[in-house]
Length: 437
Ligand code: XLS
Ligand code: NI
Ligand code: NI
Image (cartoon, rainbow, N blue to C red; front, side, top):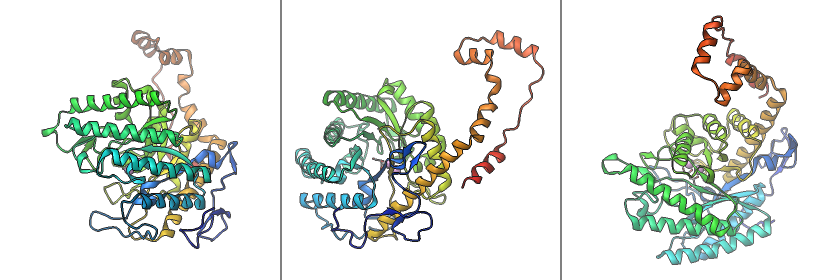
């Protein structure tokens, strides 16, 4: 294990719930089996390169505070490659098995696209070396199509074809690099794919362009033999006033409308769910019901702040809800739990990166254990099944198969006594959950 950049922090190990060591796991015990699978394989933790290495911790009212003693602040290739080594030391010490990146997080954007591509290739070489040295894996890659001023009016939905072409070239390259690094997925997050005002926007044309863009990406994926999954990450707004991929249901509808449904799954992020006016559990349930829950960006928002604060997930109740949906769909295959989360601006020291991730990992480890215990207990599952018991009938089956008619249901309704409902028992069920916390 490398020990050059975070002096004084060793490898974080599991010490159990009784430990008071802030640099130890109290619950995440990677090789411990839950429902017959190791915690590490259930949770598939990933660190976000953009937050760990590139987030200066600025807010809308003030500049960055983060101390990054390893970073010389330049756009040089040497600085970019050094950051990669710092990052992998961080992954080794935290025991996080995967990572995610944008093209422009890992390598600098230079004077021309060709130069930027060359820089990205060079950094990818360092990433590949570090992956080989440590056994860490790429969960997903993506292209940053939102930071540069050229994307101020969109990328795949830009009114300008030259901008669209630039974005397409960036995706092509990012996809190839992701493929080369053995990524298990590739994410499309449309931060600028929406509008600021409809007074200047041809929505139909923009949506058609976005779909064409994604179709070309699917074609290219086939051409290069990339076997990873494509994920769309819903978010309703910020930076745009409205983003087309506003929530899970809107994404599914868009994919279906444009014949893209087979080629994509969703990457659901907690703070985006709440910005959309939904709970995380709602978004996960919508995605999973469609068989499209691919991956999770694990963070949380603040009830009192109306933007994507990207805080670290520490809410146990929420982690239980997330893990219940994940276990319910049989676990992650290509996806995982990516900490798309940043420290507060006040937590500016390098060791805060460790506290933040240790907390997130322990929270999800507990969430996993509690979710598995609730499933083993079975009372909630049984209750939900019984709640629909009247459907477990000949008529119920035929309605569900689509072979019943209104005439037939009318005949049933006329002949039956007035329906009697059983209680929904929300409070009882919530009490059962609390027994396990
Ligand atoms: C921003 C998004 C972004 C994506 C990757 O809000 O969460 O970080 O996950 O582009
Ligand atoms: Ni995200
Ligand atoms: Ni986000």
